[in-house]
Image (tube, rainbow, N blue to C red):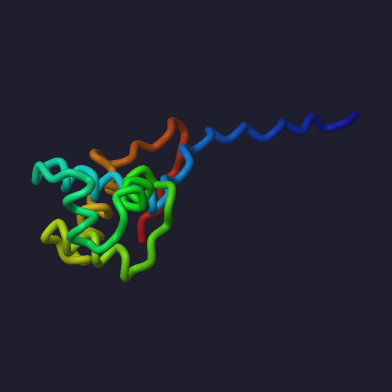
Length: 107
C-alpha cells in the first residue's frame, strides 16, 4: 500500500520591502513640511531644481549621496540624521509574533 505524503503548508506571503528611495523621499518631505519650507526654497538652498526635489520626495529618483547630502543640508540635517530617521521608520512598532505551531530555538 502507498504512503500518503502531505503537501507542504503554503507560506504566508510577506509584505514587499520598501524601497530606500521611497523612505528617504518621504522623510525629506516630512522634514521640509515641518519647517514650513516650499519645494522651491529647499531646492534653491540645495542647488537643485524644484522638479528634481519633487521627484526625490516622491521616490521617483534615486539620488546620489552628494545630492542627498545637499538636500539634507538644506533642511539643516546631516546624512546621519536623515539615515537614522529612515532606519527608525523601518523598525517594527511591536515585536513580531510567532505563527501558531512555530518553533523558536534558543542558544
